[in-house]
Image (tube, rainbow, N blue to C red; front, side, top):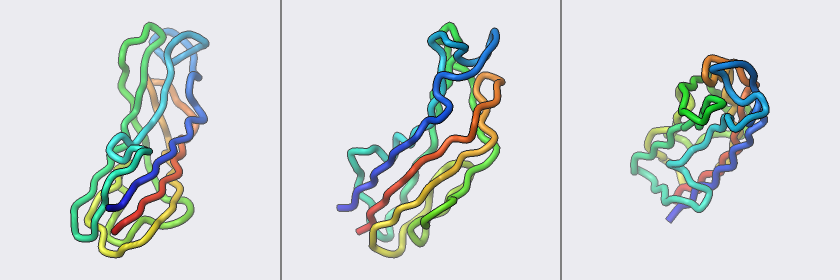
Length: 129
């Protein structure tokens, strides 16, 4: 069985200002994770469809959920396993080649609760068997 290791770095967590925005020192905040590719691992097999969606946790100062979006996503170092693609922050496809793959994803033009955030990044390691 293959394993997926995902580490999401949140350089912009707990930043932002203003009413209706993100955290201005209060309890609001923002983070992006890949819950379909948990750090504890998940089996990935050659020829079997795989999908991992970027999920954001975006809240207003009062703790209510807010809308978030990204303008783009790209692999800036390393490479995805052959057969997988990255589109709109989502990793998907059917892996074709066994091996261990490490890559760095940059999520750009990040918005949370109508406020701009710095780019987010995720270091991902996938093992395909």
